[in-house]
Length: 428
Image (tube, rainbow, N blue to C red; front, side):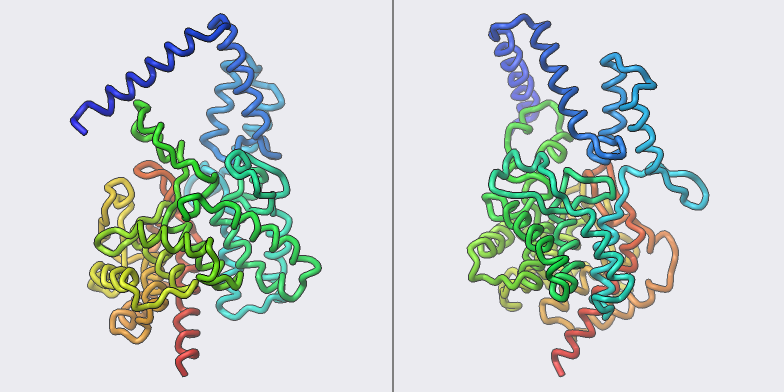
């Protein structure tokens, strides 16, 4: 498309909308008042119990200023509660105070409980029992915005933060279900119905193209391309992504007993195969970035029965080997996200090294020299505490918002080492 064409199309699009508004059989002032009232009701209906909007700082911050602009007094109970909710998300880092975008309590609890069980903790260990009870209490029981495009699904997913009760997502749901799997097996009377409700909600969220989104189904529309806001699309759409699709397939294959005999899984596999990049990698939306997406895709494909000699998996293996650092580990820059290409780091990170190794192990490369070197590097990284080991590998918005999960440097190496040891036992 010639330079400037996109802007002209967007400008014409907004002009045409303005023309249509002029044709409506109401005075513009009345239309504006109706719209403002509807927007006000929309926000207030989506405040969480702690007063925040969707449990996020940015949306709550904007809601407070919107309500003030509407004439709310600064001491209005809604605004006071919203400010209190934001204050509750402030954490002390050891040197200063940091305002979090949200808390990751559910995500961290699910990941840690899953990783500990991978490492051998029994389902009735007090730590696992406590985590399971907490996760059970945070399962969603109310409908949310996801129902707009998902008319068949019923509540049963999990959200990201402690206060999130109306905005579940696919990733938190699969890891909560992983964490609860053994409890549901041994205590079906307590955890069985919740586990099934989560599984049913997860399956209902599959996009029509075969992949899985994060929050809302079938929202990968083209009209945001017409808006004169090039950075808006990641916020306005929620397309299928390789990381979510791969991790969902891995969960369904390893924990739900599903295989390629399922049409849903075949559609998911087809989406992954169609969206592999020419170099063999996959882009991961919610982590950094190509290592993350490739790990999720390979482990997902293998979990549902795709042969390790499949061309897509061999291409992925070759790509991972080609980006291995000289020290034996892996490291990828956050710049990959906004550059839309792999950008290496000059050092290796624990989580990205673990992801790459986990993918290679799943692809049958456990005994390779590359994995041996990588495992040595991973073990060495576990004893370090420096900028390299604290580099953010979680993604929020490309080019603008990245997340340092304090648990990642422990959780993902533990999961990978558990898979490394269990694959050795399977080969004996």
